[in-house]
Amino acid sequence: MENMDLYGKSPQLVMERKTLADLPQIKLPTGYSLRHFRAGDEAAWENIINDSFKMESNFKKMMADDESFKPERVLFICFDDIPVATASAWHRPKFGNDVGYLHMVGVLSTHTGKGLGLQVSLAALHRMASEGKISAVLETDDFRIPAIKTYLKLGFKPVIVHENQVQRWENIFKIIDKKWMAWLI
Image (tube, rainbow, N blue to C red; front, side):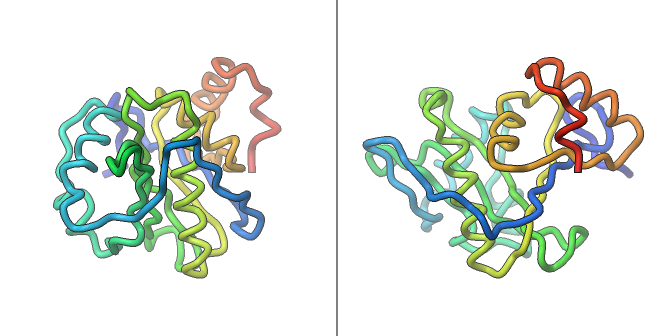
């Protein structure tokens, strides 16, 4: 069965960043700090994902039970030591051993508009590089326009994995007012 997004579009969109060798530095807004997962952060992670994805999440089932889980792979941006954004430096064997997988990126709605999604994703990319990953991929959904804009800023480019994605990407790039063919890998 193909991977389906929340609106039934299948397969999910794939984006790739060909190299992790040229990552910019992480720049957090004043008052924010970066750290990785600590015991007791499960509820904070669920709160961020529930708010970001408008869904019920379960850290144990979605993250901790996955063989890729390591606390240092789940990153948080915190405000007053309270996690407000998250992204994970994951691994999906189907993409290869040298490829990191950007996973479960979310920002509390009360903290959006500050570039936290970009910075926490960048932190996850740095984590992947520190583990020896050469490139990174992610899977996303058509309606996640703000996230797609962030991924493009981070150097990710669309990868066509199914013929139905040509029109889907064309529609997305019309919305964000960019010439989409220039972004293809």
